Amino acid sequence: MRCDTVWHGARLATMTGDGLALVDDGIVAQSDGRIVYAGAAADAPSLEADRRVDCAGRLVTPGLIDPHTHLVHEGDRALEFEMRLEGASYEAIARAGGGIVSTTRATRAASEDDLVASALPRLDALIAEGATTVEIKSGYGLDQDNEIRMLRAARRLGIERPVGIVTTFLGAHAVPSEFAGDADGYIALLCDDVLPAIAEQGLADAVDAFCEGIGFTPAQVERVFAAAALHGLPVKLHAEQLSNLGGAALAARHGALSADHLEHLDAAGVAAMAAAGTVATLLPGAYYFVRETKLPPVDLLRRAGVPISLATDCNPGTSPLTSLLLTMNMAATLFRLTVAECLAGVTRNAARALGLTDRGTLEAGKRCDLAIWNVERPAELVYRMGFNPLHARIWSGR
Ligand code: DI6
Ligand code: FE
Image (cartoon, rainbow, N blue to C red; front, side, top):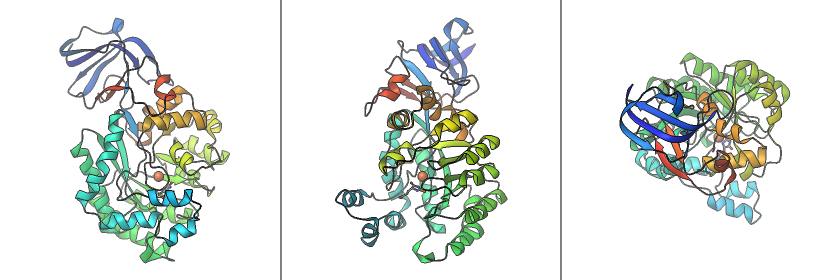
């Protein structure tokens, strides 16, 4: 078989099937950005390659996938963080102009170029640790022009860097100040004007909402999901982060790709997700940063066979995190996920959370997105904190 590149002498974590599917003496071959063979050297067809790369026993995994980020935003909330450490209350911080409102103000004042420029270092940090696909949400614009600008900036990041970008419209993230006291009026604007404009311009791959006491009610989320369905867009939901409003079951009823956060998820929500095939996206960085104490029901999810994915939730307020390696470590340490579950969470199951069937495992026919690591065993990727053993990253065969 002729092909463009062969990586040989690799330990593969192909992530096919349920676990890591490790191959000790493995080969990956690619042509035109697609894997044509991934597996044991002993079973490989004869491969004539333009380029052969000796991996010298290094571990090769699928390129990592971050399925939930708010990577595009202007400004930071370090001052707010500092105020909290010095004992300030949330009310005091809000009076001082902090919180999600301050990120919205800064984001609205930024140009598309500004948004791209401020997001690039965060994207580069993810890429430097082997990320090859990143989801990015809007949700700090909160009106038509500003939400559109955020999504345009997100799409542009995928032109500025060799990485797959998946965009999500999160207009229903917070009620903007001009709609204070009229959340229903804001939802009507989103459904009647903003979402149709975004769908028409092809700027969003999915639609998300924040279902929470401080966000939107299940009835308001239903209206957003109905509008998404009208435009043929899949949905996902920030659910059960701070309380249980039955958001995960609501998302499942709408065939959601994923329900995310889930610390307060109950057995009924787990059963609904299992029945619908909705992925549970856990965000241990947010759990850690807000010092949450309620753990997501990992064992219930496991027993029900709900696929678990992991994401950074990179955002300035509750998870200023740009490391999928640290995300895996936190999922293991805080949530007791196994090494195989952590790796599946940022590869196979993360792809599924984004509705992508062309990546997330090493097998013939998939995109050739690889991470080559200076480690022998997968556990080393989960065990260390703040150490990056990436040797090389391959995106689309290059
Ligand atoms: N849940 C979160 O943790 C973030 N958004 C959401 O829906 C918080 C976003 C922020 O504080 O800026
Ligand atoms: Fe989020």
